[in-house]
Image 1 (cartoon, rainbow, N blue to C red):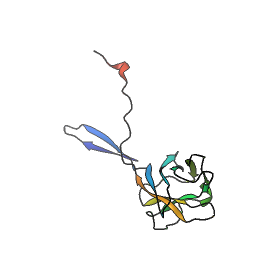
Image 2: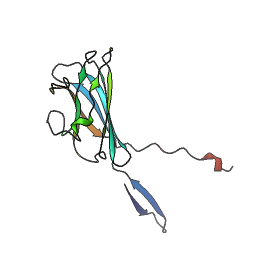
Image 3: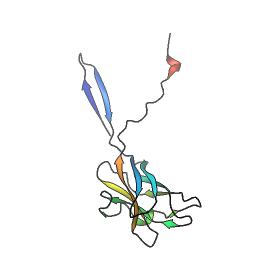
Image 4: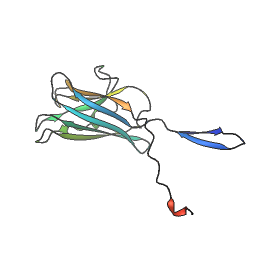
Length: 152
């Protein structure tokens, strides 16, 4: 993050804080005839670790699926981001839904191309669903105004 002051006439300054995007989101879609669908969110935890959460529907009840974030877009088969062992298996519930969260020992990226890939099982790493991560560049919600200091 950095701050830049911009002169606005008669010596007044306005400080703008520019924040590089650190939250990434993906819509996960089925590949190769699977019925999986879902979403993923990647966001910072402090300054040196990242939380990655995947939520799925349409999986086979009771199955366990592997998943990873990869460098590059879906289908490019880029290397796994962070240690492969940091991604716990997705354990599918009786309704075909599942959620899994990985904690990666690194700050989230601020640029680049990444994808969340869901694999057929923990032993068969054939991709069955994928979603390209996109940086969330929407501005943070403004803090609530302090109305206790307002005067009529």
